[in-house]
Image (cartoon, rainbow, N blue to C red; front, side, top):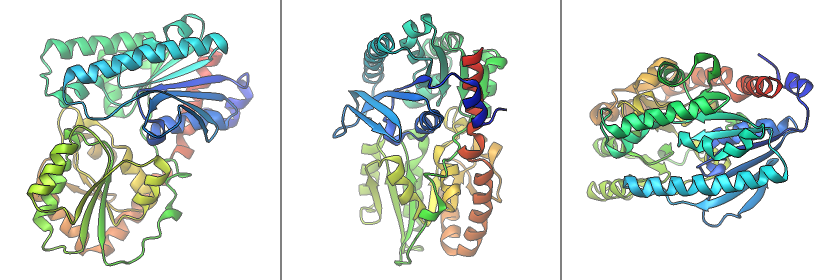
Length: 402
């Protein structure tokens, strides 16, 4: 493994790099970490991304030039709407990156999936010598099946697996967001020697435990920050909260995010009469949400253990740990793979009654919470972006020197 200084010593600098992602840059910690890691080493970095209402089409953020080329609302309920928006971004990003490459060639283009086929938007720069990294945040066939309730035996699922293989073959290197998915990708879509697993390591410069300044205001605030999809299990968290509201009168549930499940979650809150204590709040930029998370009494990650959610590593788990916030986590396959009972409170995935039981334990046993969060914070320190960033720079260095 190379160190960051070794990267600087061996690369012709400054390299010109681009992050290409169907995402809101200011909210996506994974994209930000890679972009700022390269910028910190002296690279010129662009990020071609989605545009949130009210934000400029172009600005520089922490050394990265952010180019917002298309708006999006995360409210897709049907396959056609979702696909049309993704295809529109594919075309717009292909035009943008081709034009910019003609003006000032990119040495490296780091493409973030979903979708996998976004890597082909960099077709012309690839032909002209740019190196391509495909970063699989979410494994697409299973993601699509979970999002739209599609059978894994369907023709669509088979087509998505073919697209995954073609996309991986076109890339020079494939990064996968956890070790379970790495096994799956290397079994069905790519050679093991061109793939790496890099989980969502927290950036301690953003998720700094010094942000934790929780004042005792009589409340016990439980926080979930992230996308509002069915597989995230927020309906289970709301149902569990309804079961404990009388036994935990100071408890509140604050959900920050947007997504297709939001209308159903709003209706559930109303039906259960929880409007005063369960709040559905808009997403915040990563540096703002870090402060919110830091001052929670408890974090909750209530994912379902289905074919997608069960293997999807939550970005927020290690971030809460880094901040020193105790956690309640569904016992999914991926969470049991990386963590144990000394680091988080587990509940049976998909079981609102068991989640209610664990929420009550966290509410009533603050001393145990402090012990768990202290161990988890030490674990997060050993698995932070500061410790793992060199792995990414090593991948880039080998590609550009190869």
